[in-house]
Image (cartoon, rainbow, N blue to C red; front, side, top):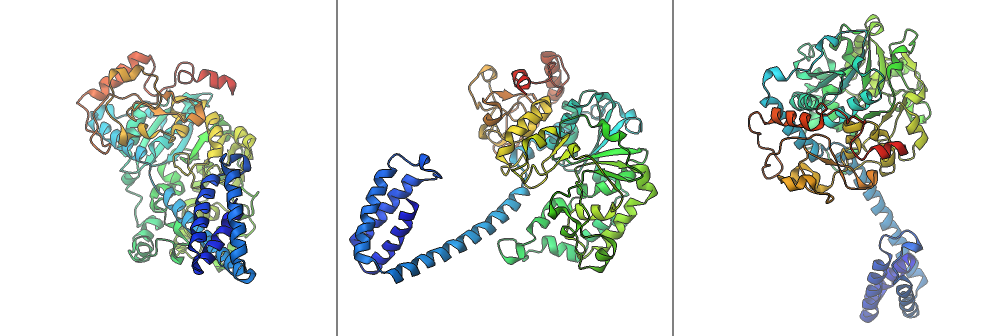
Length: 561
């Protein structure tokens, strides 16, 4: 039928040029009918039931047109012109797709933004004495298991922390060091005050309060103040659309401007009394106990990481500019890359080998971006060159944020599943085929880990911007997709759970929302009252998992796993 449509378009042009208006109108009518019958079908079985009749009718019109208009030379010229036009359209759509996917990767979902605002308001309404986390004496104890997590995404950080704790054999021995920015500091604190990770220790810091991290010490901050870098990022007449100048659009992602992305090179300065620390990205889900990483013998190396030699684009020559003599003289272009996202660092060896100084040297030399473009993996590969110990691949599976063909067994067997790439689970760009894997990964994680799928496969009604104040009757209704406040309920995807039953993540005192979804400040004391109410109702701390390890209705799903 699509071939018929193509020929009908050719003959309609010829009919119009020869003033055969009756035939032209008939061809146009049949083209529209055939388009409706074909629709989005990719196989015969998907065609509309009227398709055979439409095909016969189109065949009769084409026979008539062929008798009146057939000219081999003219038709071949017209088909070549249509092919050229289609090729140009495909190229244009590919450029547009690349541009839009990079643009979408930089966005913050409205649900995350509004939840952060609400949490921030709640935090600064709390009395100062209630803003502290317990067990602060564990923060500098080198005998415990310490994790470094740098993020400005509240719910992503929650997934990392909760999935780690739910799989830990001794949760009370785990300490999480979170660093965020000034904008999200209140929200990050409030989330974990309301949702403490069991018996684990947690500490949240503000990167803007690191006074030692300034432009006189840090090359990245110094370079961001330079005129050349400001022009690269902020100049108004810089190409930003589908022109040739947008070829490096991904490097202009705001994450490259955030110091949170570069803090990984300053671990001994941030945690001077620790011997080892496990660095985690905020786009991972932990599936197994990670304490075995502290027992890995790094053989005098500084960094323990999973190597990525399986793909040719993970070699050094794909990250670094080997036409530069400094790069060519110091590095092997065929050397294996390794993965950031789950790295065990020996901070004693780090200090002995002056790793931060090595990083500063290369970062200073790259002021004009002649050694590599942007990002932290290229300088990481250079800084830890010949100082990285290979870990078993089962510790860390990568690519869930860009590769839909990852083997399911590889995901299930990995200790850490990493959504590196643009298609994060909280964006509309997510990889649909990996949804089921997400469910199996996170259903074991309990309340906090549910967020990866809920993260944001929410129904439009469940998004904060469209919520309304709920009545008491709403609490007991089983009607699917009932409007509720985001802070009170988030919905699991029907693809994931097989139904639209709400998954309780964080119960909050009700409040009326202003138009546009921005919350009004709650009445004084309502936060504390809501927390006490929840503790009385459930008999467990706010944000802890249910006594059976999962929300009601999840036990059967876990047994099936």
